[in-house]
Image (cartoon, rainbow, N blue to C red):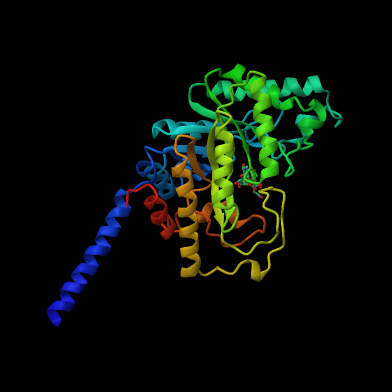
Length: 373
Ligand code: G3I
């Protein structure tokens, strides 16, 4: 009896050690190397190495990076005659040092663009030509600086409304609908060899997807070699369905473009709104019932998260060849924007690594879909 107990516990220890060594050896980038790149969005503390643990985790697990904020207009070009390239240079250096595919996010967006971009000295709206000139200078300067280093750019981000029509952004109002075409032309002029992407959320919904398809066709007809469409991938446990996702990937593939999942994370918290839009301006008051897991995620929800991630990765793997990259929007749960959106100050669990940089059950579930566990 005693002998049996000893051998059972030896087996248990063996299993635990084996699983620990699986974690030590298994990486996302290695597991999916025949399928697609696996990327991650980095903040400044990670690519400068001041958060050494998260920097090491990013180096170990991922082979592509996106800048969470430092390449947005307000950060890289805060004043008319001042560019803030320091943080971007560190970001690019991190990627080059670690042989990662470096993504540029983003050039033209309605958010995080300073007011001065659209105004003259007196605060009046500038003309179409003047705005086009500003847009061209910005794109040529930023893309030009990282030519040959950045592999692909989100040229225009979130240009569509949920019904598939063009968003009436300041870009659209001042320049007109062809602001998109111009942005892509300037990016191509700045670096003829770099990949150019269109990036948006909720493209899994048919109406918005149709708008994106029309947009890609229009760009292609005008001679823009658009390389890919980014599905941001700010998902939850029920949306989108695996069918919606599969249909969406296949619909873009028919246009001859790659699909990238560019900002993947998973909401497990109670919804504060029925909208699926990842619209950054949404902000709802914090209420206790919207923040139920401040002391940890219950095992059942942890399992739902793992199953859900596995279901999505099965769709990505089945569409390998079209899906060129899957990028997570953050390294660990601790640094995800989801903790502050659409409600500030919640405890969110959207990623594969916990606040202690350890892999969650969802990590194993994802690796399994590659056939490597
Ligand atoms: O850096 C300032 C800091 O100096 C200041 O003290 C602090 C006070 O609020 O704000 C800091 O800036 C914040 C920045 O993140 C860095 O943490 C901004 O307020 C905040 O709005 C900004 O949020 C980012 C958001 O985009 C808007 O740019 C999120 O981190 C980022 O994850 C999110 O990413 C977007 C994608 O670019 C596009 N798709 C949706 C996605 C999620 O919203």
